[in-house]
Image 1 (tube, rainbow, N blue to C red):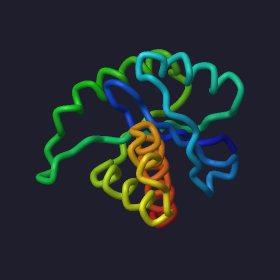
Image 2 (image 1 turned 120 degrees about the vertical axis):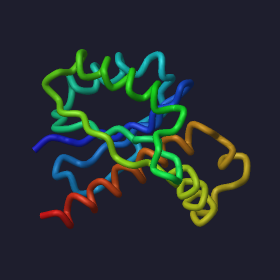
Image 3 (image 1 turned 90 degrees about the vertical axis):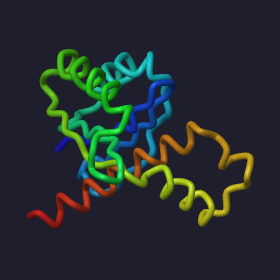
Length: 140
């Protein structure tokens, strides 16, 4: 069984999370400049078995796509061409940044550390992936 990667895509930087090989637990992987993301993923996939990539789908409260969706779609199109052997699917990412900030507060991180936007992106990816795993478990 391979891993699942989650992507919280942003125009400047992207948070990444990955499961363990049994696809039970989501862990932070990295925050990568978005311009380097394809190379990073290609390198990662060459070293690790990856079954699926889950990309955060930015939506507004009214369920309409957010402004960032056009950038996410362009990235996903490129990703599917680059790694055609790996299925890519979207997963709703609403509230992940808010939940990431809350998790950082609850975890007792100092204010300076909480202001690191890259850490917020990585934690958001973890939240996307953990939510995806829990949703998948309940659908069985």
